[in-house]
Length: 136
Image (cartoon, rainbow, N blue to C red; front, side, top):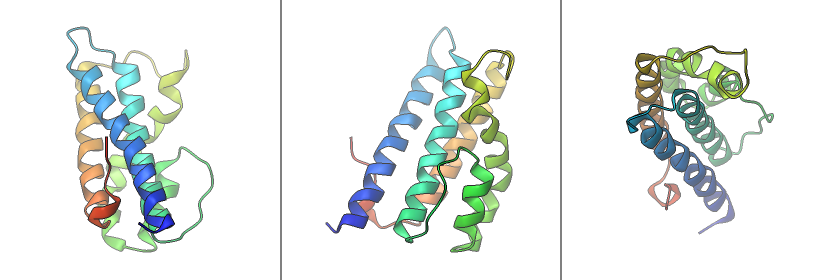
C-alpha cells in the first residue's frame, strides 16, 4: 500500500473508532451525551481530513468542519450537501468538552448528532478507495 493510502487509512481508523465510541455512549442506559456528541464531531473531522490527505490537500489543525468541508468541496462539489450536518456538529468539537460552553445536551440532540455523523461519514468514505477504509 502506498504511503498516502496508509495515512488515509490511519485517519479513517481513528475516525471509525470515534464513531463507534459515539454509538456506544449513545446506547448506554445512562446517556453520556456530551462525550457522545464530541466523538460524532471527531469522526466527521477525521473523515474530512482523510479525504483531504487522499487528494493531497493541505489543511490547518482545526476543529471547524465548515473550513474542512470548504477544502473538500473544492475537490468534489457533491460534498457540499453535508454543510448543514457539519454546521450542527462543529460546536461539539470544543464546546462539548469544557464546562460552560454547551449546557445539557438532550437525548434528542445526541441522536441527531449521531445521525449527522453517520450520514456524513458514509458520504465521505464512499468517495475514497476501498483499500483506505478503516480497519479495527
